[in-house]
Amino acid sequence: MLITGQDTEELSINRIKSQKDQISEIARISQNLLEKSFNSSTFPQRDSIAKDLKKSILQSEKTLLRLGNFQAVARQ
Image (cartoon, rainbow, N blue to C red):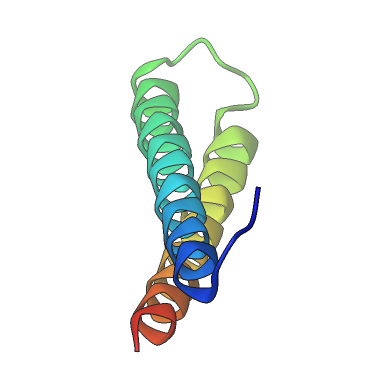
């Protein structure tokens, strides 16, 4: 199978979209876990978990921004 330049570009864009979708889902799940950890007063490590989840959410958001920039460049 021969892949032309345009096909390669489409593959790159599709890969970026897939990665963005996966990261968005991870961020959504992390946000839900964060909210649940705050609502659970029986969790002794609640603050530590919340801190880790917030860090994960921020990393996901930064990665989404970078992927969005890559996607914009790939389309040019």
